[in-house]
Image 1 (cartoon, rainbow, N blue to C red):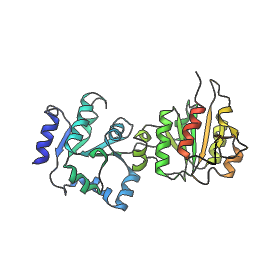
Image 2: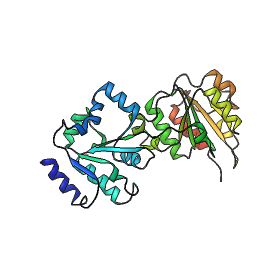
Image 3: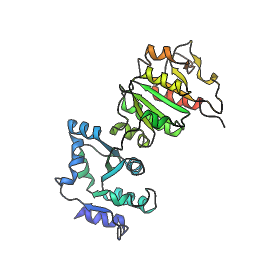
Image 4: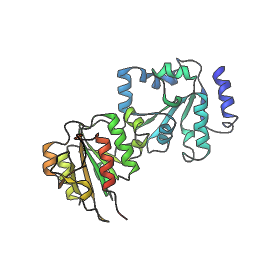
Length: 293
């Protein structure tokens, strides 16, 4: 009963009187771990990531609990679950949120064996995906929008979502060639902010650009081309509405997208470097076009 003893020591009685479904799991074959066991199998992991939220690490799990998605089960070692309970008792997740989540306590070695890798901060959670937003939903009242074309790298996408949330981007639109921002790796790289940032799919970039222009946005296409306007020279007024289009690493935006944009913008660079990582570029451009007071 080493895990049970550890749980009692770590929680110091903090679980008493709570309605949370906290269970110490001794058997690695326990069926309640099956959803996490899918992470150890490539096909199972892909199916799980495509249909549910998978959150790794204490802060990412916490952001799943505070998002519009519905957390259902969290597994971790005793100290990690006790720390999560402490955050719940402090009111971080809202009334009754942890009461609706099944909390499973396992030995940290067992956790690694079940999921097939060493879990960040020894805690991982799963949840049900909320209904997707539409472009109409996320554009209501928006002033700063990112439009992403063909970004299929989950790490870059996760960094962009984290940056977008940090810098006050109102919405992110993704064409159908982009990676899924709710996949595990993107959620982890975004530090869970992909679960909070408003976003929606669009069928194609060119049509989305035309729709954004009709909604009153100035559509800016990013490019490393020397003849593009310096992004810091773009006038930003109190009521400015910008849609900033970014393409994937390497190919960048399509010629069709570059042609239909209102302006092409670039980040001037010194030395022989001809371009920046797309996630880095997104942060610089969004900051340059931030709303003025």
